[in-house]
Length: 213
Image (cartoon, rainbow, N blue to C red; front, side, top):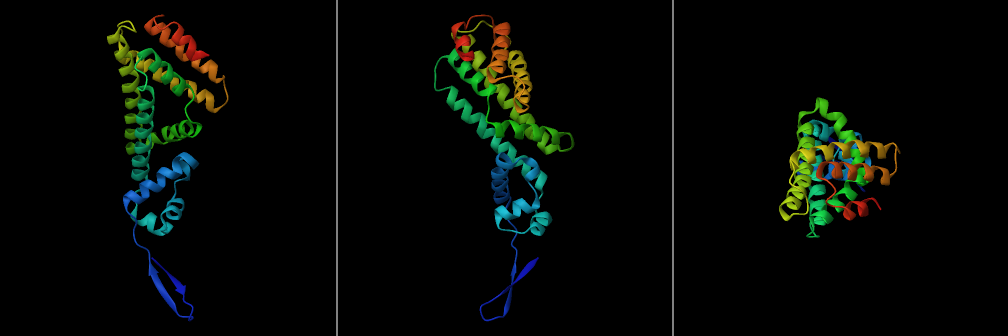
């Protein structure tokens, strides 16, 4: 597919679109997703971001696969960033407090994108796999904090995997509330801390109260 360009002398030359690499496409989609959402990822928007044409993108790019790849990259970076942030404090109780604060109020674009992507997983196996990996990464982070606290004597011995699954399921629901303006951030955080208390006892005491303040 080419386009004709008129030169200063009045003649015309033809420029042929070169296919863009998967890496270029994924980088473009990673810019579009948090800003505009998954439904804004089209041949037109990717073409505009990569300097290509919609026809070239449509003919040469597997957009669903690249969307899944881009989402996986963003999700992996998100969990890694939170992990680095909370592990800056050696106290497992402080780590859980920081984790609860982040989970109860993630960036709005992150949460909105999560819901959009989840809606598409029913018919998109690649995207479904990426979302499942994201959930497993969160589960791994939460359960690791619980295990660390149990080993250090901060938390009672408990089933870390089960508690993490319970907490994450509540987080997903509570953040859905946030998107529609149902309940305040403090309300949502209180729900999370109550689950932690119920699952792990009152060992954290003031730490949990501080998370609600």
